[in-house]
Image (cartoon, rainbow, N blue to C red; front, side, top):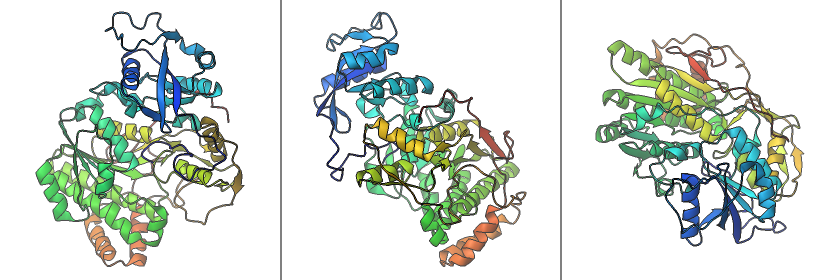
Length: 508
C-alpha cells in the first residue's frame, strides 16, 4: 500500500467467488469547477484511463449545486457532458443514470460532507473516489492519478481532521526541502503535499532505491539514497544539498523486529536522528521536523522514538545557547489507518485469503488517524514550531475495530466476512488499544548527560548488545514530557493539536 487502501480483490489471489467490477464504469463527476472539469477532460481525452480497481472510468455527467457552473468559464466543447443535478440528488442520480462510480472532485469539501456523499453513493450502488484537500494547491490541473480510492475517514469515528493553514506555504514555497523515508506511506504522502506548495527544490531520500523510483512520476524531485547511520555520509549529503527545511520520516517501525533486536532500532531511529540534527545545525537548515511513532514507551519501538525525541530536545537547547537559527521539533503520529502494515493492510490480506478477520476482542478499540491527517500535523508543526516541542494530535474517541471491518466491507461491496476473536496479545505489545497513561510516570527531562549516555548507547548497539541496549533505552524513555499532561505549546514541551467536536457518527 502507498498511503491509500487497496481493493481486497486486487491481484491474482482474490477469492474466485467475488465478482470483479466491469471493465468500464459509468462515472458521475461531483463538482463542475476547475478540478472536476480537468478530471473529466483527463478521463475523456486519455483512452483507457483507470481509476477504480483497474477499471476504466467513463464520465457521463456533472453533479453541482451551482445553477450554471459553466458560466464565465472557458468553454469546453470537447467534454459535451451535461449537468445532471445537485449534490442532494446524488443517490437518485446514481440510480437514474445507472452510474457505477462517483468522483468527488471538490478538494475543499468538508469531511462531514464527503462522508454524507460517500454514504449516499455507496448506498445507491456506486464506488467512490475523491480528491484530497491538497489538490487545491497543485500548480497544475487535477488528474486521475490524484484520486484516492477510499474515504478512509468514513471508516472511523472522530472529529473533523486538522486542516493545514495557508501559512504553511510560507515555509515551503521556494525552499530547498529534504524528506527522508520518502518511499514509505507517510513520506510519499508528505512529498506529494510539499510538491503542491511549489518548493524551490524537493529532495526525496530513502534507503530503498527501487521504492523511490516507484513514486509518482509527476513529483518533480531529486531522488537519492544515503545511510543515515553514517555520520560522515549524512554530513556530506547536507553539505551538497543545503536543505532549508527537513522532514525526517525515515526509521524502523516494525515493532516485533525491535522487540527482538533493539540495537537495530537505535541505529535506525536514534543515531540517524542524531546525525541528521548535527548536520542540519552545521549547514544552516532553518527547520527540522522529526516524525515519531506514538507507541508505548514500555516497548522498544516506543523507547527508541522517545530517545530520538530527546535528541531533538537537546539539539534545540544547544541551538538556543549558541543563538543559532535552526528550529528543531518533533511530531508523534498515532496509528495511521492507511499506512504500511496498518490495520487496513492486514484486513485486506485476510479478506484476500478468504478470512477470517482476526480481532483481539469484540469491544477492542483504537484511536486512528489517516496518513493525510498525519501529514497535515507534520506540516502544521513545522510552521508553528519555535524549538524543542513535541507535537501530537488529539484523535478524539476511539473506534471499535469490528466497526472498521464492517464499514470497510460495505464500502467495497464485499460479502460479510467472518471475524475470529483471538484474545489479548502478549503483554508488552507496543500498540495501545486506546490512549492511556504510561505504566510508569515520566520524569523531568535532564539532558545534561545525554551526549554521554547516547554515546554509550550507540557503542552498545554497534556491538549488538541487545540486553544492554534494552536497559539503556528503557531509562531514556522515562524522561521527557508526556503529551497527555501538557496541552499548550511551550518551548521544550508537548503541543496537542485539537480538532473540533465530532460530527454525527457514521453508522456501523
